[in-house]
Length: 238
Image (tube, rainbow, N blue to C red; front, side, top):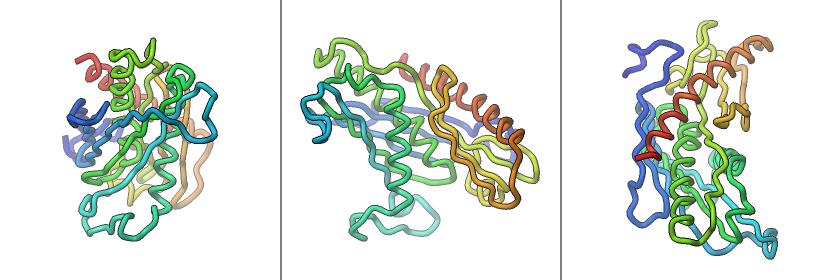
């Protein structure tokens, strides 16, 4: 479903493939239009120092783009010797979103690290990462439960994310790069299956927007997120 063929309130074609990495405790490849993100979950029997002896677990994330995920080659963070500010911000957002739907007490003193590697970028990489990372996290939680490391699944709700924006004074859902570049307002929304907001990041690139427009954008994002969560449920039921 190309950008020109879909309506402004439609998601791009979505495909989630779970269990794509043999060695990871959880994995998922998410494709939203031409944006593709590989998400892998790693379980480790340790926690950060601030959680030692608390009985609580931890979920954290790392986010990176492959050098040719974009039209021009991007240097790897490892070569530059530091994580870029954008990558650092995005991985913190993904981590917060995932921790909002998992009971860290039930996880026990172990960590789950989710790696989100952008294979191809065409807008919405952070929102696709959240949606795909949840599937990888769910796989890791199922692994821990199945293998007897924990008594019950610590996942308490679903979570997904999508971008929305205003283009030529019209609301648009799931912006690709071309749409994002032309948007007067762009916003990223992360929401749980219960309809609770976890992240709302919106910026007016041109003129300011009203509170009514904000409400309309969140409502449109909710429509898209419900569809994404339906897709997550289908994939995890396989």
